[in-house]
Length: 535
Image 1 (cartoon, rainbow, N blue to C red):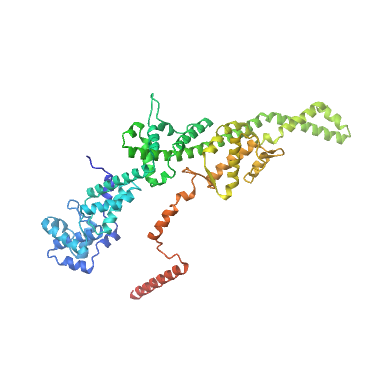
Image 2: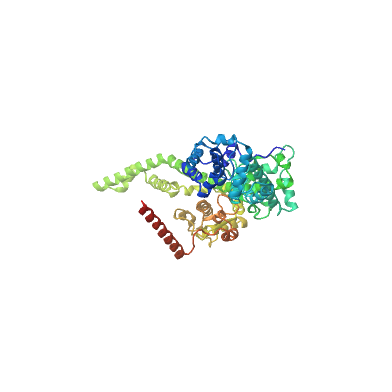
């Protein structure tokens, strides 16, 4: 069976690569007095130099240099400068006896208190990585964590192939734990329902394929289809909170894998893996569908308001000539009245000379009609598209679980009133319906002498919902884009467990913190003064 590769070529090279900045190289090439005494115990210059290079590697990076890949020239020069030797002694050391090199390594292992990588240590490393492997499947992250763990436990870092193989085994164990965690709360009925999603007949796509279809064009029909998909997922009644039993990174990764596979491909997996992937796909699809329903609604509202503005502009354009005609007519009437006053003539006769009195009265009615607010404010036109909103709004409000902050509670209460009106098929808005959320620009059309206008009330509430969702005043359960802010944080129970193990690096008490910082400042000032005195 082919070895599982979890690291790219560049990642393999980066893991064991030495730093190349001058400061780090200088620090690596530093040897204590005890180190220098141990190095000087070896007689030949090449032997001393090679021993020092091995010590430098083991002490700083945790592994011995590969005989096939020479250390960087910069590091060799730093070590040679420290030992007052020439930097070309490394090839001479490698050409010597292998026994000498092994003896040097054994001596250094004892001196540094490090131990070789064994099968037992490998199993311990896999166990250590399992927790991380349930949170991520990125090989480079697991490998970096393994190297840190090996250095902390004074273990010589093995060859990169061994590191990769160890991480691959940990990753496989992490996959198994994730699959078991997702399968644990599922009942036989859940598993049967998940398997039925993959069934297809008569060249028709499977139910899963239908659930994952994109929303399509902006219209009420597509909103209803998306609500049907959301309802189908809800009907599976998957255990509540199953999506939070594993890390979100793993859930999204499994969901992406499942989306890329055909239903036939998924049937070839083991039952545990298949059901785990399907759960992730459905939970991710639920959030996606919820967000897309809200987005479709917002785009529908924008489309309706834009159409209302265009309709209003077109009507103004169509009545433009008539408005100009009326203006000229009233200029003539006004001029005739002014002339009659100046000459002492009969004003009524002056009007009659411009146009007959019945035509003048009819002209007043036409002008009054042209001057209506309806002709200048798109809000007076928006309800002409009420049937479009009415097509999907009842089901949308029933499907979305909205939760509001105190600031948006009146709007949330209004949406509950609208939902109840849909359910009871009421025609009239209750007099007790909340109005605090209605902005000033809407009040003139929502609140009328006859009471609350239902169509404008619904349009106003659903329009305000858009802004409340974007501001975070209202969030939607099951959504990804509009979820509660607390859902982005570490769960409170987990945080309480982590707090004792991860204390703050500073005191939480103000007086203790200030006192510690002042003490540190005083000691640093004394150090600076002492250094300044020494020149």
